[in-house]
Amino acid sequence: MQSSNPVLTRAEGFNGQPVAGGVSYPAYDETAPAGYAPGGTGHAPTQGRMTIDSVVQKTALTLGLVVVGAALAWMFIGDIDSESAMGKAWSLAIGGAIGGLVLAMFVSFKKVISPALVVVYALVEGAFVGAFSKIIATWVGDFSIVVQAVLGTFAAFAATLFVYKFFNIKVTDRFRRIFSIALMGFVGLLLLNFILSFFNADFGLRNFGAMGLIVGVVALVFATISLIMDFDMIERGIAAGVDERESWRAAFGLTVTLVWVYIELLRILAILRGD
Image (tube, rainbow, N blue to C red; front, top):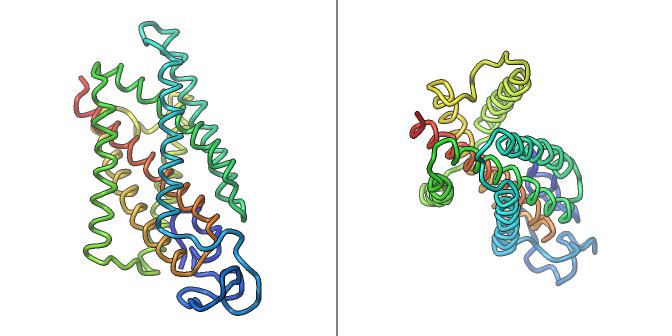
């Protein structure tokens, strides 16, 4: 069973593949001596098993680095009171978005997770978040919209986690396949729209009108479902006894999704409040 998040599908244990020692989820030998992998092969994880605490710690760190990157970008841009200042902000936003995408691809397709790449990604993505946030806040004329989007992101995360645990949601193979196909199609359409926007020939999917609002709501639904997928795969990874190092992969996957939730909320709030 594979996650819709490509970050988590690269690691054994997250996707139902055997972990070191040849044991796959849900089997795990709780009596194995410390320092040895299940199955009695002697092939040991390098840092023990991933736990919910290690995932929370790494996620807090990566999100903190996103905030640092955003704050630095915000201060670097300064007041957007001229076309040149707006141009600098857009350059930083687009550069951060492209840089974050490239780094995300590197992290996603590495078989062995690189904590250093995750750290760099968080800072670069933070630069995009900070620049884009300042552009939107300036356009709306109210900087409190950023705080509202941040609070909304954490509220969405908490609500999704509550629903996932309280209703004991089970992600089936069929639902996962359908969602993955729909998500790839949606992201592909947005990417095409982004490329066409450079030639003034886009579909208007990401404008700040009615179409942009509809697409933003759809994207937010996709992002929320992605959070559920992430929770499910992290639980599977913990149950499979994956290496503690994989906490970085789980944290990276959650960070990618939470940044997506934040951006969509910020856009929706801006559309609702913009003239």
